[in-house]
Every structure is written in structure tokens, then in C-alpha cells.
Image (spheres, rainbow, N blue to C red):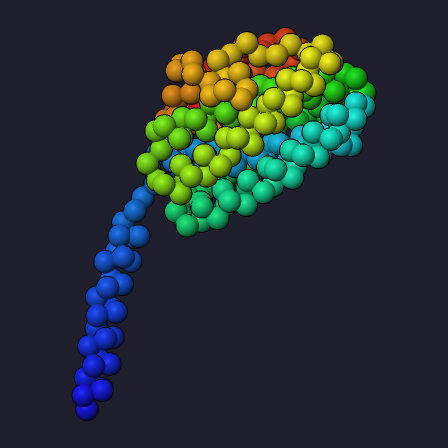
Length: 226
């Protein structure tokens, strides 16, 4: 009998112990910043995976092909974490890239050879500047630890991509965005673009509308930040 009573008491303690944790988990809601970052970085990944595949198919320069392959691998891996985090937090993710990102993909689809290579690098520079800015904003302004951690893990990957793009841009004669998000060092002056963590431009980290004038409009990537 004593054994049965003890088991009953243990069961009661387990239930009591679990209830507050479950209630806390149910009550936890990601902030607008966290939600928008997850949605935006997911669209960045969708854009980068598609653009990376295009680079492998249409690129003339071997480095463009190689970077495209790297971007597909890295952004696919990053997106797996984004999707699992969003699922845990009940955040619904968009099914497609943003309209601006899709425009850039459509434009790249119509280019070939050296023209494609330059337009692709220009688009990627702009997109990575914006993604870096959005990620830094999440690190400084996010409140949900799992999302902030995701951003902290993503930042060095995005910066490594940007550094590789800068080096390739120099060999191809492609202008590099003159923005505060200058690659590896943390972009310090992203105050105006990056803090947009709450606006409707959350998709912007794909950094795309700025690439439409593909060749030279390199300052524009930053303003489109989410």
C-alpha cells in the first residue's frame, strides 16, 4: 500500500511539475521582430537557393558556379533550422520569395554568359548586405532566444558569403555596395536600414528590388532592409 501511495504522490508531483512548464511554453509568443526575421530569412533562403541553382546552370565564370553551389548548400542548411524554429514557435512561413526577389530571379533567367555573371554577383551583393543587416537587427533587438541564436549562427555564414562575393566582384569589375555593412566586420552604421526590424519590408533581406537596375545601384540594398 505504501508503494502505491508513493507512486501516486510521484505521479502528482510529475503532473504539477510539468504543468507550469507547459503553460509557460504555451504562453511564450515570439515578438514581431522575431516573427518577421524568421519570415524574412526564410524568403532569403528560398531566393538564394533558386539563385544558386541558376548560377550553376547559367554561370560562365567557374567561381560564379562554385559560389552558387555553396549558397545552395549553406542556405538549405540554414533554412532547415529556420523551419524547425518557426514550427516550434507557431510562426507561419511564406511559401515563396518576395515579389522583388522573384523579379530578380526572372531577370537572371533571361541572361546568359558574362552578362549573367555580373548581374548575379550584383544581386547577391545587395541581397547579402540586406540579410546581414536584418540578422544584426535580430541579434540586437530580438527577444526569443532560439531566434536570436539562429541569427548569431547565420551571421558568420552570411558574412563569409559576402566576402567571397566582394572578391569575385573585383575580378569581374562589378561595383561593390558602398554601405556600412561592409562584409566581415559587423556593419556598424546600419542604423537607418537595419533597425527596420518592425516594418512591412520584412521580406527585404532578400535584397532584391535594388538589384533591378542590376549594374550600378548598389547603395539601394541597404534601405530595403527589414
